[in-house]
Image (cartoon, rainbow, N blue to C red):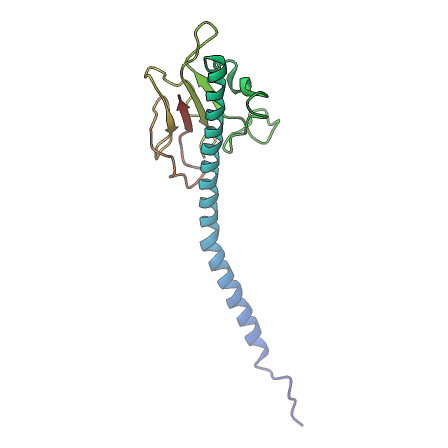
Length: 180
């Protein structure tokens, strides 16, 4: 009598089929994961620019009420709680004290306690997470608009193009927004 359900040669085909399915899944993952990481980086850049736009609007409201912008030593803390409930965190910020998930945006102005501030600059660390703009140059009359350009802002350089070329954490340069 013949066995109908068990044949010796058919069992090995199932293993081959599983290997092919796993190989296809790995190929698809190899294609989609880098694209996902690039999309995440672009989303963080977009978030940073939106946060800075919100802060810029609040700085203009502060200027309307006070007649000057906050000085660097006071910074964005002058906006809390009258203009904004909390300062958003830089999506690329590194907290040097490891007390929070990230650091806040950096704020600079051209005024001090004796001179009213007329220009301001909000800076994000950019994808590499390292601060590249540490002492902005306020020699020009305006630093308005989004800052960075394709390679980010480094030193005292201020590009005027949107910084949309970020694709990995190795991208250097800060991004920012200046005003008025």
